[in-house]
Image 1 (tube, chains in turn brown, yellow, blue, cyan):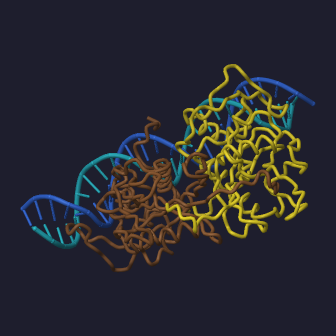
Image 2 (cartoon, chains in turn red, brown, yellow, purple):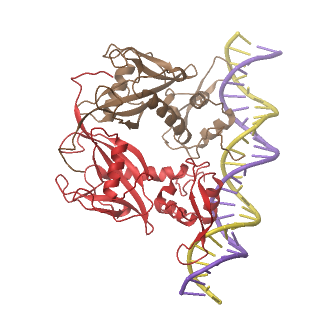
Image 3 (tube, chains in turn green, orange, brown, cyan):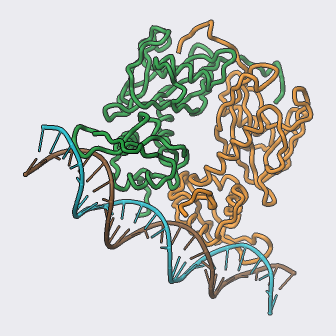
Length: 238
Length: 238
DNA sequence: TCAAAAGTGTTGATGCTACACCCATGT
DNA sequence: ACATGGGTGTAGCATCAACACTTTTGA
């Protein structure tokens, strides 16, 4: 890497966040309405500029707290997605954006942060055309989350501290948009050491009906071996 | 995203490249020797600043061509790894670096590019302490490549246009550092439609000895279903 | 008594591992 | 002849999808 003054070019660096949650059986994403041009009045992913002494990770977690209004975001799942740097992606200036994906257990209605722009949880399916290249970022984030559910213990990030296996299954079914076999799902999850840990003696009614379900907590494992593959791949071996 | 002049802060944006190849049965990575401070005389990953109208992907491919000396890098595998943005990662100034991973079929000795710094292929195992946070980047890249071999048709990126299944197996064994069962490997690869395509009638001697092996080309598939899992995971079910 | 959801059992099919074995080539 | 690497066959084991079935609750 050369320290060439000619090649040096200042860029603005931002973070953009694709924040997902599950509510009422639907996958939802946090969007903010833009107040200024460009794209005034359109919806966009929340985000903002890096402060002088911040890493992108720090900035992303700060923005996550500001936009959701949550006081403690330290335990939430937040990971880098990728960086978007096309020269024309912001009409005002050269902006390089590091995109992040965040997963939330429940969906508290966001209180507007410091800025006046309103924020809302929008169903992923109806998240219309967004500002900038945020449609692409959102699609990439969704694809990544869906793929990661297969081989990472990620689904618990959508769940409250204690949850039933039915709720965990609903995470998979909502993100993938497919139904899963309940008995087999249960066995796969329990067969992965460290994925979930039982809460002794506790039980909860899920929908007001049916047998009370045992409660579990997220375990220490991060990898899912063997993977929990989503069904209905088109190219399956007959 | 607010267009707040107070929050705006100019950053330098660079790309860093972890370029891998396989030669003489060893995984090698392309390193450059630094000529200036900081870290003068130490080895580092190749990279450079983004030009004003370049995306990170464009800059990465340009740097790849410059550092390897190859005239045509359009067909080479190049993908974003992640972005490193810790405030102190470059002692001179605030630099945000978008890291990429590249895979090359063979290992032509690099002719030094425009800059005088010499470049060399170094065995991954002996790639000593590198400048900046490049040790971390290199380790992340290696981890990603190893993981991606399991479920993506990535191994052909290490091979020349026509290759034998033995050469393809050597890719896996070299990156993973484990031996694979030859007959089973063959079956798994051929059972994945579009992974490799036979070159009709062609054959080649691999090591001067043994039966000539059939030649294959890379196929159009990108996903590997079912995945080709690396053996000797510690946490296996008994 | 019924509906709904949790939880357990079982069975046939599939896939995979770990080999044994044959083939073609250079020395 | 033999070493070397390519290619085929197969037996046993593990896994898994698909379903039937029981249990526990609210209405």
